[in-house]
Image (cartoon, rainbow, N blue to C red; front, side, top):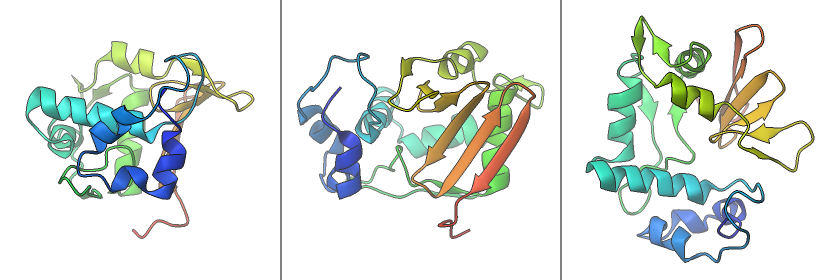
Length: 180
């Protein structure tokens, strides 16, 4: 685990460098990977950078092509970094009905309108406990909190979606700070 990327994000340090990926990689390793949970926007930023370099497409283009277009989600607003990349770890704005589509996609194990948009194997791994957090009763999957019989994904306090797996219900609740 590299530094406290959450604290760095709150201070805005991750938002300023022209190469935010190199910045995250320059942080000291404070714990071996997978040994201690610590939310890290920097780790999520690296995922977007790696995908961009591997495919030659910015993360927002990949998200549109692989996820948003198949779900008919078109009205999204990204927040941008000084290097021209989108902030993939936070600050993505979309309508609650479109957040609900993503939640429903997860509840349906990656299927949408009869097609497999996201691998069921990946959905199963992403929504399975990967590490325990410091919060009682909350484990963490792939960028989502997992409470008993539910998972939660939230972004920069602007919007939240929660899916309850036990009875296949979905709650999508924009936060009070949402401007949409």
